[in-house]
Image 1 (cartoon, rainbow, N blue to C red):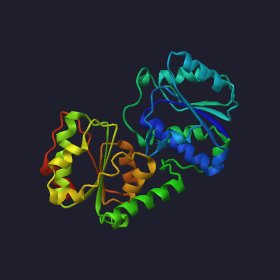
Image 2: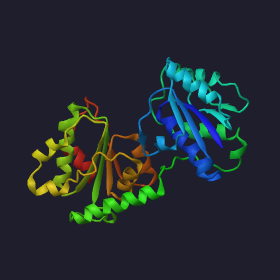
Image 3: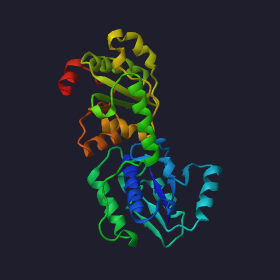
Image 4: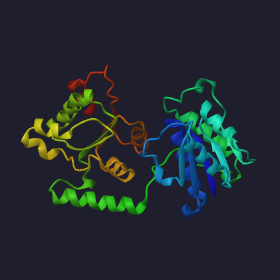
Amino acid sequence: MKVLFISSASLNDIITLNIFYINLLKLYDKDTVTIDLISTEKLAPSNIFFSKNILDDYCIFSISKQFLNCLNSFKKKEYTYILKLGTTFKSEFIYSLFKSEKKVRTVFKLSNLFTSEKSYQQEYVQLKCSNIFSKLKEFEGSQTLTPEVILEKKIYEKTFEMVQWFLKSSNKFSLSSYRFCFLYFKSLKESNNETLFELINALLAKNIFVIPIFYDSIINSENYAKKIPKNRMNLLIRNFSQNNDNSHLYLFLKHSKFVITNDHCLAIACNQTNKKVLFYDFEEENSFLKQDFLLNLN
């Protein structure tokens, strides 16, 4: 099974791609599934529902020789299906460049003429998946219409062992004790530093262990260490702050008492597993009030 996806980088399209991928794995052995992707915008390296590791080949739309070479390379492949998930003008244009009887598309949305969808819409994604599934003979019958975390089982098990070993050898706690808060933030700015420190300090004041990960953020975690009282330093476990892979994200989500994040994908995964999650988007116009945060925490 060889599939080419054409999509934007919107959360709706990433979740849709996830749903198609996990359904393919229910029908075919993983080694027999080849996934290529043309994205209209740059994708983040990974999130809990998507990893570039599932892709055999990948390119980003641009007016360049590099993209034309990539496009010509894709045109030479014999795809089982070419699926257009994106609803933008760019997605429609790329789709029109392929001549095949095995093409399936979502309907172009005029509202997305120049921009991608901004927010995640569960019902819309499920409807889009159902409509495409109905046109593909492989997916006749029941399908999974909710996203699932993409994990490499062996890597996940190894990650669990390494994290567990570190925590025990440092006299912290066992992952299975569910005593910590998983703090995950993406793309924070320098202007968010003070707010983030106040949030961390509020957690530590409650004697809550905190495991933070800061991805693609302009912060200096060492500055936090200088401000935190020595009797609370043991509560802040900073050793995994750069581990943004799917295995670490899911491991900390699964074993934490609760999650605080500004990442929509992680919030969706928390809701699916009935994990308590506090969502903070850290927009500059929003001020952090410790009393409100502690009220939410309780």
